[in-house]
Structure formats: structure tokens, C-alpha cells
Image 1 (cartoon, rainbow, N blue to C red):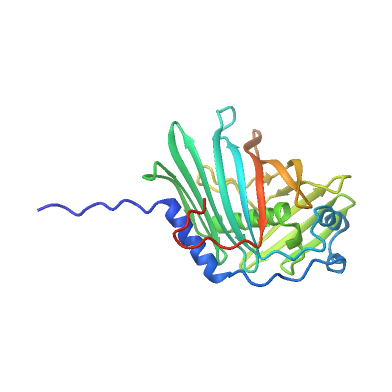
Image 2: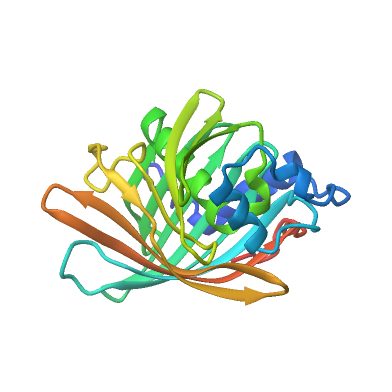
Length: 275
């Protein structure tokens, strides 16, 4: 008599596709939303209004969703060699939903990282060679932290979505504004800085702790923008960094290049390769 057969865990790609199917069901692509008009920006602090105008968002429909492709050099610790990664993410804005899959290689082995944020709950899984789970986080702490990630995505990659009743803005000075994002039970705050070219150059928050050790250590998280690119009449961040201000000094754990941002895209059909 043989013992029970061990089941191989479902691949993160399969989980990614399943999450996309759920997102498509809940957030079907509808007719274009109304165009963003100057009157819509009246409630924004002046530096944020200038940034939205500079981004080319005026006169275009407010987005329902977006698809983003990113390349990144990811660092496990200061001074280590980077891991090169390609990521694809889909985001819906009505009830914020983010489905993100990263492909990379570490020590010659394939690595996949999956972030899913839906219904105000997040999970984050990292798996090596489709078999060994290195990270499996879910629950209140990761959900609150990933709410900051959703806010960061909106600020950097979807300026037209910054006009939203869930975002409460506070003017700080001619270059800086503070925003509080309320999404269900989560309430997170970040500060944004805009330069003399009306480009968003800095975003930082104290509400996204460092979970790299599984302890969710309180720490400032920032995503300084280091370059912009123009495409289809839009002016959006193209390169940037992801940084934790650790007690022993800032640690840049990611150097990111945004390859493409597309709005109001059709969700991938079930079974169609989407990343």
C-alpha cells in the first residue's frame, strides 16, 4: 500500500492568471469615463495640480485600469549583486485591485514573486523553481503596507486617478503636498515633492514597514524618481528607485525602469498568457 501522493503547489503564474480572471469579473472594462477637465483639479494642492497637467492627463478619460511592464535590478542586501527582474502588473481603480507578477533568476534558478491586492486584502508570495516558497505573507500588516504600494502606483503611473474622494490632500509648500488614502479599513499617508519642471520627483511614507525579515519593522519607504519619458503625449516617470531608510543608512533594494503604461486595457482572457 502506498502513501498519499504529494501535490505540487499551483504555480504562481497560475495564481496570477486566476487573480486576473477574478479582477476582470469584478472590474469589466466599460465605456470610457469622462475626460479629466481643469475644473476637476481645483481641490488639488498647487504642486500636484501642476504635476497632473504636466503629465498630459488633461483632456483624456480618467482611467478604469492600467497595465504596466517594469524591469528592475533587485538587491537582497547592501553590496550584493542584483537580481534582474521583469514584472507585469494590472491595476483596477474603482475598488483598488493590483495583480503583480515578477520573473527573475537567482543563483541560476527561476524566481517568481506574486503580489495580489483585492478587497482591501493583500498577499505576497515568493517561490523558487516553482517548488520552494521563500515568502508567504498575508493578513492585516501586509494589507496595510500594500495599500501604500497602491497609492504609490497611482501617484507615479496614473496621475489622472489622483482626483478621487478617497484621497485627502494637504498643501505643505510650493513644492510639497501630503496625501492620505483611505481604502476600507486602511488609512495611509505619504508626502510628494514636485520640482521646478512640474515633475513628481519624490514620494515617501512611514506606513510601509520593511517586511524583508518577516517582522514588519517600522521604517520610511521612498521611491525617488530619476528620469521621465514621453509617450503618446504623456509625460510620466520612467526610472526610479525603491529605498528603505534603515537605521544603518538608506538601502536601495530596487532600481526600476518603467517600460510601458497602458490605460483602459482589455483584461486577458482565461488561459491566455499575460506575463
